[in-house]
Amino acid sequence: MPVKVIIPTPLRAYAGKREFAEFNATTVGQALTSLTSEFADLRKHLFTEDGKLRSFVNVYVNDEDIRYLSKENTPIKDGDTISIVPSIAGGADPGPSEIRKLQ
Amino acid sequence: MTIKMAALTGTANPTVAATLGASSAPATSLTNEEILRYSRHLIMPEVGMDGQLRLKNAKVLLIGTGGLGAPLGLYLAAAGVGKLGLVDFDVVDVTNLQRQVIFGSDDVGKSKAQAAKARLSNLNPDIEIVTFETKLTSDNALALFKDFDIIVDGTDNFPTRYLVNDACILLGKPNVYGSIFRFEGQITVFGMPDGPCYRCLYPEPPPPGLVPSCAEGGVLGVLPGIVGSMQAMETIKLVIQRGDSLVGRLLLFDALAMKFRELKLRKNPGCPVCGDHPTITELIDYYQFCGVRGEEAPGPDVQVPEITPKELKSRLDHGDDLFILDVREPHEYQICNLNGKLIPLGELPRRVHELDSSREIVAHCRSGKRSAEAVDFLKKAGFRKILNLKGGILAWSDEVDPTVPKY
Image 1: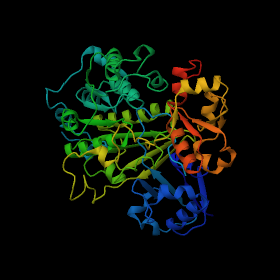
Image 2: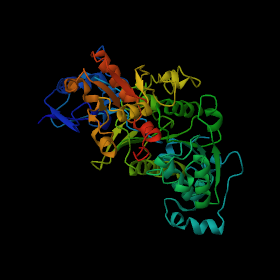
Image 3: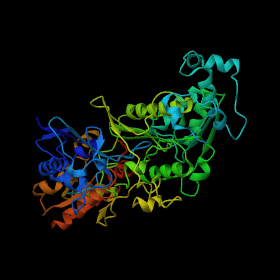
């Protein structure tokens, strides 16, 4: 049984509108690599140019933040759920539809 | 004032009611009218007279009276929070009414803080409501916060969220946090002793434009109602010192799937504001920190050749051969359109072959921002005869054809 990666709403536009994806992987890093291989547009939203996880994107294995485990080397086992949780700011008055990035 | 962590286990702390009302003599009794009004609280052992008096002596500051602030204000006022502060410099717009249920149609054009105060005073004339019709800034935040016990963050942008967080940490005040994106919400409580802060969760904001904070914008109107109501619940629990607070837990809510998930939040010992060796000891320039100068992350200011709606109308009437390119999304095209060919901005790079570069093209979107990017992109791709419709469909509606709806 593979691991499930939950894709948050703001990033679904870069992941074929998928809510989650499943991969066979033994570490968080492997799963994220598989994810960004399948959805190349996601890469720049998750990683900096030198390959580090961006500081406004948190990754959890089940309910634990990987920053307090072994980061990308955190081992995962079948049936684990990986959550990608970016910061969102909306609350008072989300603006109208304006898509700004051309890639 | 302090609200002790011990309180969160449900242990009542008799000194807190006194500290909550520190600046004036705390209320020690309810009037008969109040007893009747709050009877459904009073007959619950979890609230009771003790809890209701704590509410009466509580001072809660709401940052923003928009989508989250609307249910927050209504429920906190109804619950009998003795002093409510409302910070908002905006005015009510008709597009707010789809979700900001504190306002009525008569309020359009009025100050949000004033309109909210009028509604809340009507709901509960026994409480004190203070309005601050100002933008929250590094210069005024500490002064505004210091007279309140709990700060509730219902803002809509990263600079203000970091400002609210840092000001709460510097003053030692709880920050009841909620944020939303389309149909997803995040809720937690920051700023409690030993609990994490917003910077522990996200040390830095996304650079402008990278995370689509407004892209595909919009929000299901009920979502801020649910998230704001949960913030109100957490606020009341902090005041009455009952239940398990969301301190150290990030609650994720997906309204479309109707699923809740919970993640553990930890205090980061290296946090620059609440860690063991803080490097941020006063408020900073949060627009600079977030890489934005304005209210929102501005789009790239692309300078491209433009055509005004009136010029376009007269050239079309003249029978000029113009190709209208609409770079909005399909669901926007359904709202209104100028009979253009629809190629959403995000699909343009791979569908560029569908355009004839020998014809003169006029690109448009809703307001002119996205189409400016499209024009910039197409010029770089070798298109010579391409213009951006200045002001987009909004300006077309204003200047040429008012039957085209604005959205």
